[in-house]
Image (cartoon, rainbow, N blue to C red; front, side, top):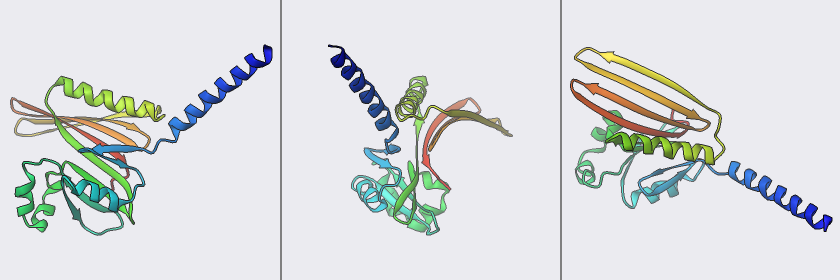
Length: 190
């Protein structure tokens, strides 16, 4: 009887250790549209998956190449009509996401979207915290930045940095209008 109890404790211990090791072995990822983008994934397959539903435009050829991703299905026809050089000359060209590729591997990605209300802000923070803690990224830091521009405009942002992840939530106030954006970053984006 004592041997069975000891074996049970050993198996429980091993199960807990294996579960913890498996949680730490999760490949970091973010989701763009309905496509999961994993850190280190082959860029060709990620770009092909995104191109099924979205407009994906290469932007330059440096050691780290950017790919701009447009997910707004209503805007894609007019964006496709624009000459690629004009589209790429706009700062981030209004892209909903950006992939960063070195060789044929995803080394970074970012996605952004507007937040409409406080529920959206809470949902973005909750989703990030759930992901970070679920993948073992418990050592995080928080930084803030703000600036004020003449003409009654202010901008404030806070960053939640957790390993290969960064979450940024920005508030911009222009006159009586206030807007919020959230960005999620994975890996290196420079």
